[in-house]
Length: 215
Image 1 (spheres, rainbow, N blue to C red):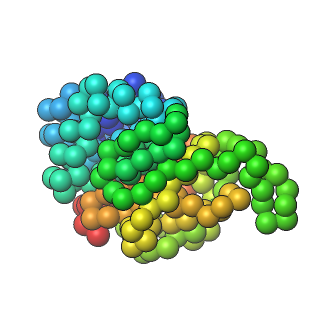
Image 2 (cartoon, rainbow, N blue to C red):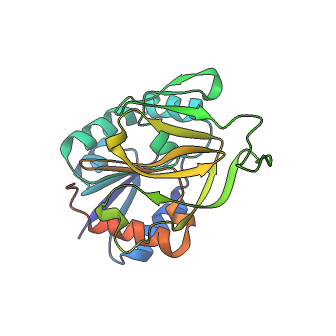
């Protein structure tokens, strides 16, 4: 039976993610855990995250989740980051007066700003909350059966810009263009919430559970 470790460091939407995974693949063993052995022995690893990056990174380091993430990525097994679990993978976030992140990928998390406007000059609310179109920039197994331009659900005030443009799997626009998904080898990470994105989000999770981690 396939197993997936959803890393629990007290800052993720764990119940919804676990239920969504069980829904798309009945019989999958979902381990909501921070236990290193449980994470290490799982076939796949998912790093969720909601809330302030300062609190998330503090718990990630206190519980040793940083080591678990590095080991999982280095192992070659399929790895998925969601929302703050995506932001935590880059080098630095502007949030909370500046926080060093895990630094697995070169990039920065920026604030949308207090005077964010669309192309017509209309002011946009921050946080970016609701549905928005995702423009795929690469052909990846996790985009299987998901049309380019599909709308996903977002809740965030900070966005990722990756230094290596070859790692950008998709972009989005909300006043500014930002990198909504990352893909590199066995790692895929997204800013939106698949577990809240209805059919398209469930399809992405299904794709992840069927992915062998090769890209």
